[in-house]
Length: 340
Image (cartoon, rainbow, N blue to C red; front, top):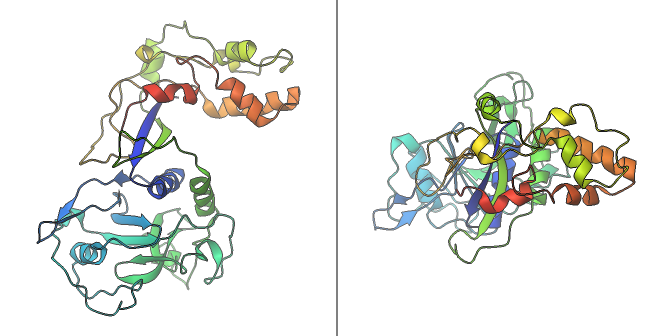
């Protein structure tokens, strides 16, 4: 399987964590695709656009952006809004009008606080993953809203209280089904909260937080056609890097998996739309992607090696990640990865 190692940059760590949440759920996202002008010459720049769901999403630790309600009014075409996070939330929304074209209309969602709790799967409306967030998010001038998924078809979206029957798939038509603590969502919250990021980059003060991750690429068959069969197999890498005796024998299939393929063997990157300063989760690369063969299989073999050699998972993974830059170790590929 061909993968591209990409680097995405964010204004805040919280934004980077939400990108992890969307990736775990396989939800396409664009970060800051464009800015919208206001009548007084100022601009607003929402954090995320989810093109499949047509949702604008912003996440802040404490305070909502000053333009958020006016932006919401422009997107949904309604001035009948209130700001529940303000003491005077019932007062009419005031300020210069923001211009948003119809191609960007959809839903508008704001989360104040960190990543929801992925360890509290309580389905009680007053608890669950949102128990530290005033019970949910703000959407279209109302609250509380929560991410949810359809228990039948898996459609992702945001609804009042996370009621899955309100999703556009309409799979549920009997009663209210709160699915905001679905196991898939909980796993995504937990992964987002536990993600580690590269040190902040002083050379990019507007986007100091970098997140590096793998994107599966098309063109695996083409890569195999171009392969010269000179690269080292995963089995060879195991023999060279893991402690002697870690394996009684090389696992089945390890000698047929390409463990290191130079970029010249890999297919050309997939070109995708990249408006504004942001980029889709699948981004346009500045060069051909690296080929990483079977990372899930390598993880399984690493676990077997740890059991056989009585070493911790951290020790085994440290050894695996010491391979040359042309190999399958993602830690070594970071410096040469294309930038978002």
